[in-house]
Image (cartoon, rainbow, N blue to C red; front, top):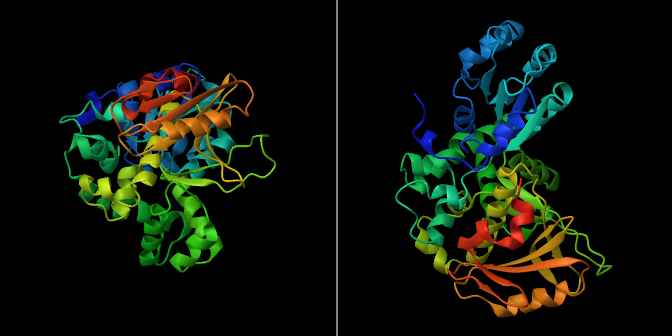
Length: 399
């Protein structure tokens, strides 16, 4: 029997089907519970499903990998592939003998383990798709619809919250205890879970800020190398992203620190102790959380289209800042994010002045929490509702 959310379309489905037409193996990575196995079963409902989280299944495939592969001549869906990375060598032998495309779909929620095993054995034989939790448009497939932008930011995008109608604070607290903390113990051997919990909370409080590992480690009570290791673990589990500083020649003094963003604002809110969407309206981190929500939505759309995320941020020594920068071969898009529901023409003017220093086509967007999009000669005051239809972003969302 298929999961209840099996009927909910994912934007990435078209990308998975396209990649499955090219390669014998498709590797789908993303955080736990983002819908990877569901997506695989949508694309290939005819394939057997193997859950390598199951000790019994894992032991069977580990003891006789070639035999198990040969028992599945049409291929299979291998869920949580990082639990058995040595299986990649056996798959290499199989697909070299039979390179028919789209037969093996592998999912993984720990990027470093998957990437390592795939790079060693499956390079050139596998295509890759990254799946994050639901976009705000995908979330609308569930009922009831979100009341407003702050409910969307508060709940985030993990499908099970909507599929099972579990209150977001309850499900996300279980998610942290069941997956985030457990996986960290497996990856970096975290011994003190209380300290690690403090680290998670402090990291969430720094979302949409430039990353200072020394400060984060000091406030947590751990060394800077430990803070770096733990943050890298969150990245490998697809829970946070670091946006690099955008390199531009308009100044010789640019701040190089990356910016930290949580990839799911529901998770960030939960770690920060926010228990109701209404708290966000007056919360001191409202602007930062909304900025991370926008960064996540842009990242999801790029990944769903099969494109790597190429978001950046910019700040120079003179204090010129741009929240998000998308740089492509045809144009550059400068994005300011404002959590107010009233569009801010002043922010657009600042982007317009900065854009005048840049060569080529430069789009200027101020993405805000209101419902109305306004286009002017200086740029666009874009409602969050119009992210999918903004022509200024088409270059980065296309497949």
